[in-house]
Image 1: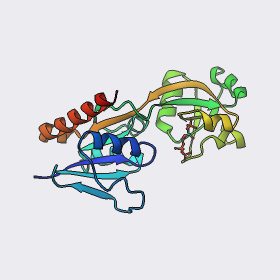
Image 2: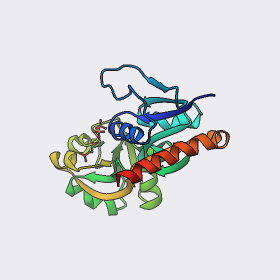
Image 3: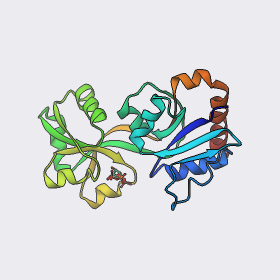
Length: 215
Ligand code: PRP
C-alpha cells in the first residue's frame, strides 16, 4: 500500500501541528527533534509519511501530488493560489494580514495616490489594493523583516502578518487596515481526494476529533 504523504510547515506552525498530530494518533515520531537534519519521517504502521517544508512550498508539493495532504497558513494558500481542496480550519496560528505603517501614512490610503507597498505577499497585496480599494500601488516584494521598509523609506506602507503586534509596536508602526483573518488550514490534492478518499477522510476525521478534544 502506498503511504499517504503529509507536508507540514516549518517554523511557527510546526510545534502546534506536531502536537495535534500526536493527539490525533498520527504521530510522525522523530520529526520534533530539533537536532535532526532528516527531512522525511515515516510511520510504517499507519502507512503515513511526513515532511517539513517552507510554507510557500507546501501548496506546491500538494498541487503536484508529491504530498497528498498539506498543513499550512491561509495566507500562503491564498498567495500561492493553487487548485487544492481546503478541507479544515485548524483554528491555531491565528493572526491577521494587515496594511501597516506609521500613523502618518494613513492619509495615503484614501487619497487614491500612487504609493509603494512592501510585502512578502505580492498577490494578496495587489488584489487588496486593486480590487477592494481601487488604488494603484507599486508592489515591492521582500522576503522578511518587512517592518523595515517604511522606516528606511523603501515604501509608504507594508502588507504583512500581525500576530501579537509586538514587532509593529517595537518599530513605531501601526495596523492601518485589516485585509484578512488567518489561521492554519488542511489542504488536499484533488486527485488524491478521489483516489484515496477513505484513508484521507480518516486522517481528517482524526484531526477533527483531536481538535474537539482540546476545546
Ligand atoms: C512575521 C511577520 C511580522 C511578525 C509579526 O515575521 O512578518 O514581522 O512575524 O508577529 P508579531 O505581531 O507577533 O510581532 P517572522 O517572524 O515570521 O519573520 P520574517 O520577518 O523573517 O518574515
